[in-house]
Length: 247
Ligand SMILES: Nc1ncnc2c1ncn2[C@@H]1O[C@H](COP(=O)(O)OP(=O)(O)O)[C@@H](O)[C@H]1O
Ligand SMILES: [Mg+2]
Image (cartoon, rainbow, N blue to C red):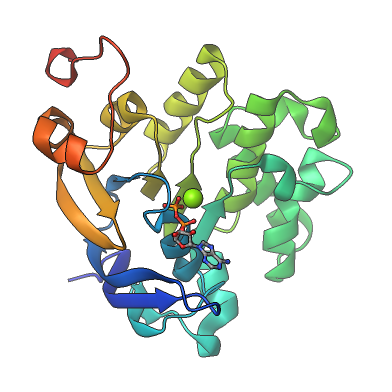
């Protein structure tokens, strides 16, 4: 039996000003699953994500990544295992070329020379950006920068890829290209999103986080079709979108 990619148990957290954001979150994500994390503004989604690689540390409860507890002891390894793609790619890309940005993580982990080149090549290939290796990131479109940000994280071979609002600010073609990339990856994915059709398209399972606890956990199609549940947690489908009608 291999350990799940992510296990969160009894996670509670209050910010230093005393505002409590998480009230005992429990969830488990198995190897290779793609799971959407849904919830209204202020539900605690970002607070939860920041606990997954130890940017915030639990007031109570535990976070375990592939059997390894998130805590001070294993921080470098945890940061490699949990690949977080932030909402704004410009927070993640800061080197003169795409190649250097993607090489940054594996180089910090000690990779050099031909082995490093091969890892960079493969990561860019997985997101369809191999032809852009020598370009400065700021010359790329927003959608291309987001895919490069995904590559910087894939380059460290993470146990779990965590994306915060991956489809925000993307035009329809870029949104679809990113979906194609995410579907093609053989990695565990946790995707925070307000884009419910995107969740349905990409994630067989969804979690609803509401007022700092997991309020629902089930097949995405069933969650989106539960009008009472959706209304209770301020989740709204786009006008005319009928989840049951999507193949
Ligand atoms: N740095 C902070 N200090 C105090 N309260 C915060 C801080 N960041 C977020 N919060 C509060 O914690 C709650 C959860 O926030 P957040 O995790 O950002 O929610 P979400 O990402 O689901 O919109 C909100 O009520 C928010 O106002
Ligand atoms: Mg947020």
